[in-house]
Length: 264
Ligand SMILES: [Zn+2]
Ligand SMILES: [Zn+2]
Image (tube, rainbow, N blue to C red; front, top):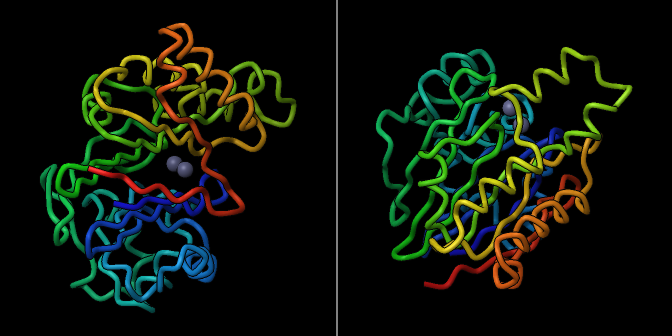
């Protein structure tokens, strides 16, 4: 498998995942032309995208969706609650492009997908695990807290794209954020802090995670350095070996991230 975070953050999210013969996106939250542009940068013709899996209806996850899906006749998968909420924005899609996710597991050609619920202030926010033969990658962003079920889905993945949204102190002291917004971000339905993400990853050690791409970083209330440092320190607390063994990276807002090849 290959995976590349094309964009990550409150201005738009999209992640590319490729199996043996099937190419998908998780979210399409940057403009259609920017998705095309970033796919070309990793050598992928946009017309080869088979399907788009949507996590939830917030605009930073669906900005380019309708235009891209109509242009390339791409199938779009998301939870029924999310379809109901974003229906008016998706009127140009053909009915057979809109696929409801009913159960937790389904296949797109050789890719096995499982989804899991995330608590977020959306109609129904989903995380996804994508497996191809013995390789597995997972993505979980836009969640206020973790649960044992979320940890279980993530912990045997080789690579996880995992939200590390804000540094709590930076957020609390940010004069540009009204209290209501701070409370929303910090709530159980908001976004994960660097500390919460580090604690969750500490629970996954030893089960298979080899790389963590910290994602959906706030440009106002976090920096890549802070997110990485918090995670590195947490791994060191768990043991010096973990800090060496787990590869850390950060998903970027304004340019594509590194391309990862997951070997079986
Ligand atoms: Zn959201
Ligand atoms: Zn978001």
